[in-house]
Length: 166
Image (tube, rainbow, N blue to C red; front, side, top):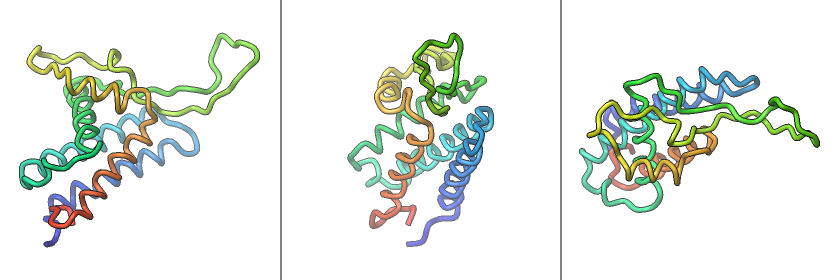
């Protein structure tokens, strides 16, 4: 079975967004560009996850951390989709006030705490399970690492016999 064109498009778009994220982090971190690439990658990963769930009944039966990670990513994507999405932050580097002994950590882009995410516009959009998964699987982690985990999940799905991605 060959990959339907729209699945291929979404998978390529996810990979392209990850590459742009890497470009925005090397050699000088551009947190604005990193935010745009992060949300783009989250969008495409969620498109794939939702379509696979609807088009392939066996996809919903899969186990492991992948389904929960995708749900946590959907939570943050949904929280940011209709607002100005400040969902990542730069951490590390030199910050005032300086405290001695001075320790300089590398500057990295991390996912913000769940309490820092934009609130849903309507009560019906609250998602406590998604928030709990976000806190457990994504919050405070480096964006690059989370998207690597998402990529690993999608690659595993792509190699599964009968997957719509292979």
